[in-house]
Length: 383
Ligand SMILES: *Cc1c(COP(=O)(O)O)cnc(C)c1O
Image 1 (tube, protein in one colour):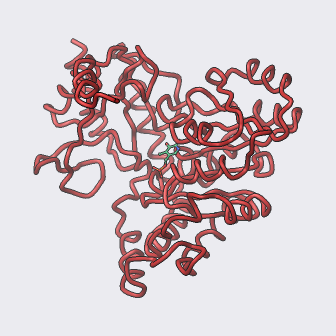
Image 2 (cartoon, rainbow, N blue to C red):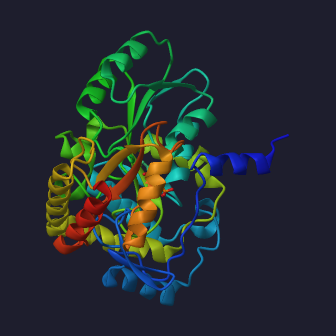
Image 3 (cartoon, rainbow, N blue to C red):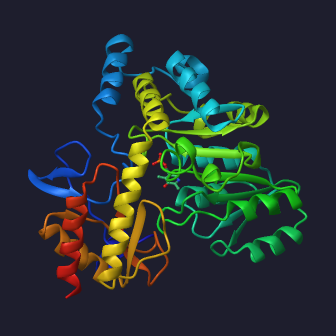
């Protein structure tokens, strides 16, 4: 029997105990925690859309017209025209034949990998893939192979020696804890060579990088046909909630028939689809948000490097400061909180042991002054 209390105590001793903080304002660059104003550098609201008035209004208008609940799963009677329109616009945006909405990214990943494979197949995953992809590989009947982070030689040899019927190479587009972009050119070449499919989880790429925010394949100069399955979430750059999978007809139809996390769950509220439609139009046309984000990334990297902090080679909005020890990450995070800066400590098992970090995420909604304030608070800790 699992000793729950001992496990909790052990966690606490290791500096791995997790706690929630209670927000009493909208998400954004400045938030309220227990009525205290705090600068937030840990949300995934990369474009500053989570509290955008037009997007909020789209949801309000849809609620006034259609109510809150969808009433049922998509295959029963919950599939609303707003869901359908969003799917069509997302497919069009990403240059794929079709798209399918899921209630969360976690569910999308579980649904895709379990529905598309059986025991004759192999799923190849980067070791640093998001937990939802790793879980999906575990839950599926396929063999799960995890290759060292971005190690294309290792992946090539694993593919070469495989006798699997279907092979799917699955990777984060932008790695969620390190911020680097996956070597998709090499991955798609290997996929062609070994007749494997490719799946890109672009939770941190869509909206943020690539032409018009089309994500990591576009950022690297690939075309939509290079990627078999392009997954994205609506809760990060989109500022809403939910997720989608874009792919060709046969794949989407298989998911509709067989993905259990699609079939056996209530459809997201239609109002969220309305909000996401408005987000999508802003993402496509407002390049200035991506330009502003780039400036903040540059400002942060320059300042943090001058302070002698250990950064990773990331050009994206995800800029981890590696501290190593979990307790140290926790202490820094608490000291920053006392200075009105909210940066969460990311510890094992979310990241490998000995690489505990503060995960800084920048947003188009941060001002130059706010990033300066973050840097001077960090300077105080370095001293
Ligand atoms: C956040 C995230 C998910 C999960 O998406 P949710 O909609 O939050 O469930 C999946 N993959 C990656 C890479 C993520 O960062």
